[in-house]
Length: 187
Image (tube, rainbow, N blue to C red):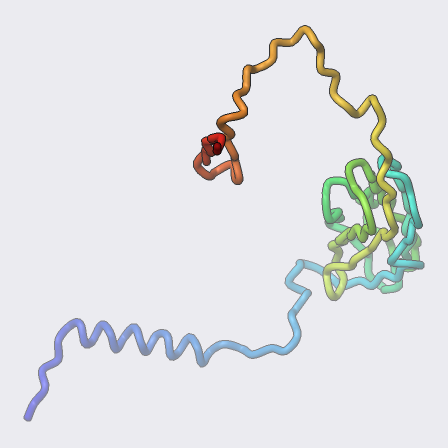
């Protein structure tokens, strides 16, 4: 008995062979290769990586300077520094830090609209292994008490809508349909 080969059978065999060869050609590594960043790897050492600002009033801006040293034989290049939210703003040196040099990074945290315990993170990206280093500002933001200035001024001259207590419109979700409740007095 002879089997007939079709072009689709040959095509399927070629595709499977290609995938099998590409899978066996993969190199297995246990550690990521950070030299792919395009240059030598440097090391940096911080005096501290966490700053506890204690308890502050809401609306206060905290500024902390983190000092670090390039402890390697290669120039240290900070390529990015990013806060965990828009309220945490880092400023970092843009020029290379030479071996043995000390530099600083300034972080500002604006507590406006923030309340309670906080842990703000700054992610530094550099030519280090691993490429990310994390710095933290921690503490507690004490909510400010509302004053009369916080209450919107409602003028008596403004026209008021005539609302009937017999019908209420409830909006449980901005994307949901309106739910109307008709109220009737029971006798």
